[in-house]
Length: 432
Image 1: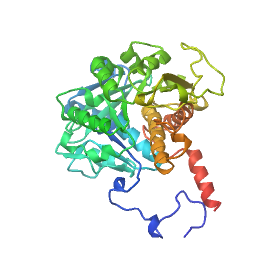
Image 2 (image 1 turned 45 degrees about the vertical axis):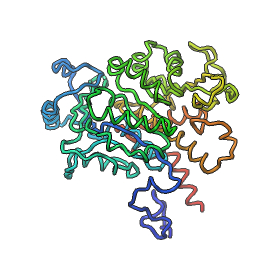
Image 3 (image 1 turned 90 degrees about the vertical axis):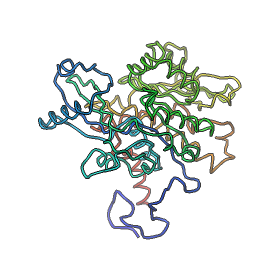
Image 4 (image 1 turned 60 degrees about the vertical axis):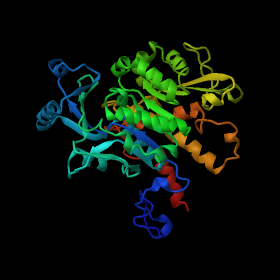
């Protein structure tokens, strides 16, 4: 049954069994494709502050740090009553990425973490659930007595973001709540450096358990780095973690400098590729870089003009697809760079979530590779064991476009899919 007129959605209620959406655990349906992510579940609260606010409170500008729950309450209500709380969003790097992945791919994702077991209408946990894509499966969250964590995002007059974290129950995830079968059958496991901050926290042990399961099952592990201060503090721990578990590393130029000691993004990416197989490096108004390793026999030359920066002709093999290290006989490092989509938005209120959006596009391509391999195993696309479906050049275009969409809105999460994709789907539907 079709309804007259142009609609945003195809159906308003199910008219055939095949169109019904079950409320059961859809990730266990045969052949389903999904990703999993382990996170400190947080609500992001954006607060516009004065120039001297950070100095008065001894908060390090541009960094992420922990504050007492009582201090967070005091600041929150002070600025809430002044009308200077500009937004309250479900947050967390992994939470943002999972939401964006599900919006882009229309495929499920699984969130692993903790949440308040006594949820009331209007509280932080309620807001988190209401503003997260229904495709993000929250049934594996561990219920806790304490409230959810909060990230107070102080936005200075110059646009710089400073995060004060009120922990709540965010670090209480127990290793017993890590579902092995969910991770084993996922297309990728996403984790964040924030969960590795304190080895005494239960979530630290849970992270190690999750990545151990992923490694044993050959599931790619994707690591999103925290702030540069956290990376500097945990540098040796993170390097060891990346070398042992990580396939894809996502970071910005500040985090790359803290990790490698190299300010040049290309050279930093080159060094990181000695530790993992793919790197996404965002450089703000200068766009983003993607680096990867591939086998020499699978390296594909670009048809675009060659570019030289700190590496001569660095984009020569940007049409290549990333490969797992153990599948390479002779490793070749490949790179690509892209400037901001359409020069970037004319006005950027803040950059919160732009890197998470780009990473969601990368994870979408990783899951697309598994989807295609399962359905067309004899395709030439799978003559070798690649990590992604597309070349790093194509992935950079997709990641850049998704990042632009988040920068264009005042939210760290996509509010909808990409407009051109929605228009194409709607046109195809009404042409039937």
